[in-house]
Length: 267
Ligand SMILES: NC(=O)C1=CN([C@@H]2O[C@H](COP(=O)(O)OP(=O)(O)OC[C@H]3O[C@@H](n4cnc5c(N)ncnc54)[C@H](OP(=O)(O)O)[C@@H]3O)[C@@H](O)[C@H]2O)C=CC1
Ligand SMILES: O=C(O)C1=N[C@H](C(=O)O)C[C@H](O)C1
Image (cartoon, rainbow, N blue to C red):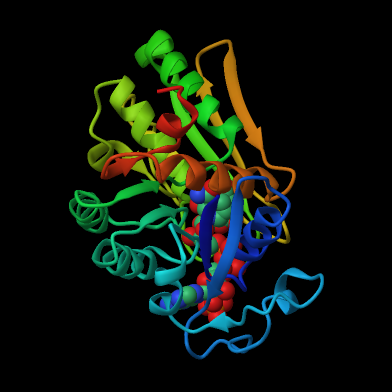
């Protein structure tokens, strides 16, 4: 039985993950925590996930749950997840991180920390998006320079980072497939008299509104035809189930930083 604790258990993802852990065989919820000022701190976890009292209270620190858990699942923010990874490394516990918005420097730090503990870090845990990553890589390589690439992502009004971690990953995949440097060719917004589109640029456009769960389109536009590859999440359940699957997988891996394609065996 895998013993899992959930960081940010009061959040949109944390609460759904905790609920689904309780419905999944082979994994057990042993704790959940929030930041110390969170209004649910000290309350029974059932107040967040529903059902009968669990006897577990929402704690205010990762340090409280690490002794109980084999793995911590963390959907908070990049900076918070990195701090939690440091604690997990000290306690020799595995981690699954879904937070997005990591800078290159933060990613490097995560890679360094994961030298001593297994950690899955990925901007999107759904099967569909990870298949999309492969399709986009193939399409970019096959279509080549005659097709302009634009990535469009749409999310709910509460999302804090932009572009989405998934859109950034898609842009990195396109740049790599076309032998381009994303730092040089990424175009994140357009306004005013901007002149004609350059052949090399990769556009990444962000939409925010309402309760949109998460949508990503990669548009390959040529002269006379275009291809659009789109993934739409209907709910957060695919991300949550992916995170639970990753938690069950990662505890059996040697130290290192893994992505979801490795978890799914499709890399
Ligand atoms: N990889 C994937 O498949 C997916 C990734 N994500 C990413 O996951 C992250 C979270 O998304 P979402 O659930 O919508 O966001 P929420 O804001 O709903 O949840 C984050 C939770 O973490 C809490 N938190 C903040 N600081 C700490 C801390 N120091 N310790 C413990 N908990 C803390 C927040 O509390 P408070 O609200 O008080 O700040 C909040 O309850 C985002 O980066 C998002 O992009 C989302 C969906 C899928
Ligand atoms: O914040 C979200 O909600 C989501 N974030 C992830 C991202 O930034 O890519 C994944 C998903 O689309 C939902």
